[in-house]
Image (cartoon, rainbow, N blue to C red):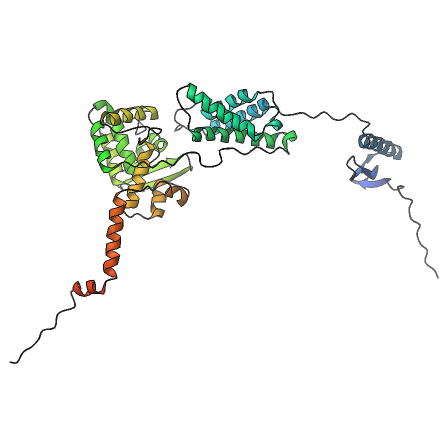
Length: 407
């Protein structure tokens, strides 16, 4: 008894057929159609009530595919994102983020921060109607030259680090545009020409003599009392200026000798064991100084102005760009460097400073002349430990034998 072989269905005859969809019999098509790039794409749709409807829809689909493949249809218009659109999109998002993170402790609120104003100035320099996809690394070079010349004309030369921060904002806006607009998916944001270190690291630590002189100068005028308090508090805690400006009275505990600081940079709190700082704050509060809620009342530029006047009055150079000058952030350098001289381990200094990594802490530990004497004392102690004669001469348990004579 032979087996009956079923005949194969002619090729293409099953492209239009009936299938069950959601409990109902529906007509539709299942077909592969060649694409303009030569690849094949599958199309399936079973939504039709009759076979004629499904056949007509498939014919229209094939006609469209054929026209597209052979260029009969006019090419689709592609939009090109302009610099103006990219900047407006990024500024809108940046302002929303600033507003979302704004708290009652946010000092000196600005509706348009400086880095966003720099971004808008760059857009005008580049021409707002220019396409983002046309931006190259050379455009960044021309921008750096323009910013440098602008600083000279304003008689306020810009540091390369300042220009680099502006470029970082520009690159952030471009990267945001790449993620937002479809026509920029294949666009690669050019690298900054200032990727290497562009400024020499500051190596300014106040000596003990300079600290004493500046403190004495700040104490000569009663109206400088808050500047003297800030100078002392910053030296003791090594805090960032923004951390000290937002400090509240309840964040200092004189009973336990601790001070709490919140870093807007790392978004973390840290508690310092600093009895002298807690006592200093308590004394200020007892004298009814400060604001009802905050320890300090003046803005940052007021402190910089008074510190400059006091320093220059005693012949000490002041200013971040002045050769040999110091600035308020150097009080943090001075504090952390002295902690290292006192023998505090680098892990302890890292926690005291509120750094995210030890690598950042190492940048703050500067060379001091006292380090030479400290190293000499340590080397002398090690030399004595390795000298056997030194052990015998300084061992109190070892006694010289007594010679007994004839009785």
